[in-house]
Length: 143
Image 1 (cartoon, helix red, strand yellow):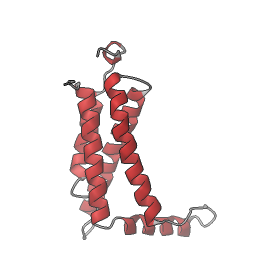
Image 2: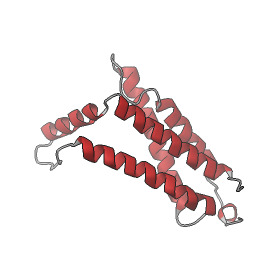
Image 3: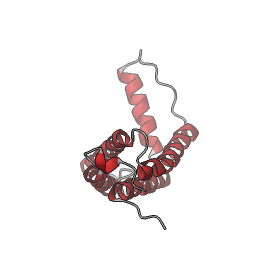
Image 4: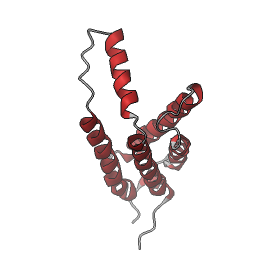
């Protein structure tokens, strides 16, 4: 059985947390929050062409992103392609998404969808930042 290094484990942890976060957002109705944000942006910038927000497209994109990130786990494991850059981008996304949800949860008087898993997102992002190798020797395929 193959043993995963810390980078691969951190990436996989980020994927799992992201999938759980998506499930929480879907279960607790965060689509309405994003649809309201779309209306808000259209009100502020009427000339900015924003397409109408559709639930099916939103959900399909989230699930597709999660599946794609899980598929990239293999590339992290074998150290192929620009996965170090992808890891920095994914870790940044996880960290900022977690901070955003925590901020929204603390500043609102009602429950904000995604608040329960926000701390896990923040943790997963920080763990991934720490696990990303910094030199080319550690990213060479040793399997």
